[in-house]
Image (cartoon, rainbow, N blue to C red; front, side):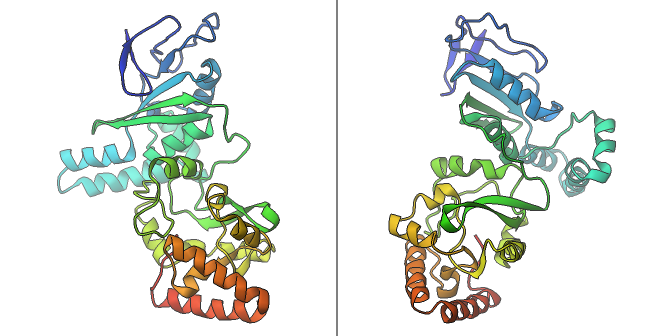
Length: 334
């Protein structure tokens, strides 16, 4: 038996290494806890019901830094297969897949019917959702290989998980962001990313970095839905933030609410300024058309300098400029 390790090298099985022949198999507790070993789920995860429970069970069974290997026919794999085998007609198959296996499988009125009909063994999962589920359940992504027909993902057991949070699935979801006084607030947005994408922020920054346009956006961000870019272009995804304004957590105008990972990358003096005020729906870079990464920081310094002198007038001025720039499509949402 051979096992592919986290770095893509195939090695002979050693003592303590186990290849899981199916998701229902239980590992022997008597195995030496310090021995390096790997569990490979032979069945594609999109055919495994209650996937998170299975991932958590494997996490518990693995020793520290143990390896989990999974396979999945992703949303992109299915689309490519349809294009190859149904040329000219694949769009109809894609529409069926989307309506039945993506919509009906997730909304409350039809979810129970779908589960009974399929046994919940025909999940259609995106690459982003699979990776997000792994991170949510306490794994660190090591490698991803796509052979065209399916993805093979290698993940290492980690001590960090997000089980204390609730994964987002609905059309409107909440993101943890740094608010006033450094407190974490949950910012509302219309979904423009695949489910579980929020757990991949650190992974995306670490492995993809930011695009070369210097706007602080993740490069080649596969988490964004196909229609997500258009919604961001017209700022429709930001509309639910008005609820944060009504709750007193945000202002109409102010520094953009950032994730903790992104916030930590800002200069220390700007971090202190940001935590003195509520974040805003319309950030300074939108009003000043300074969207690239360096100019973004400069725009915030200009804004805070003016706000400290004349708070009310500054917010009115920046609100007017921001609305004008959005209306004339001069800048898009993040």
